[in-house]
Length: 161
Image (cartoon, rainbow, N blue to C red; front, side, top):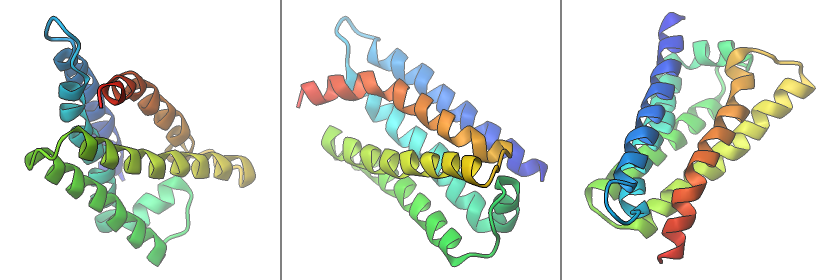
């Protein structure tokens, strides 16, 4: 389904946008401000990845599973979609209620924990079942790029706590 391919690219573009503008915000002043950078980046990234993936799974679950090479119609799939949506909703609440960097980092670490192990799951599936579909094999690499881009601002923010 072409819509799912478009959603995949929309996720990538939004995350790229978040990195570009996030780093621009962080380095805008005379002193680097990782809190301002992450305050912008965290909800945008989590909404783009978890929120859109959760919605995609709830509305197009069978099609999404097929293009990844996974079984269809699983209740676990629906639970995973709801979990993804919960990350996005919490990230948006933390942003709008301005609960601060500790809350922002908490939802980010929760999100990254899930997606790190999801990426490993996709990698193991590619190796064990020889599932080399694009939707399956790109996840581990995209996850590593996401983590790599977040290391510096997260470490800098943690130093300031």
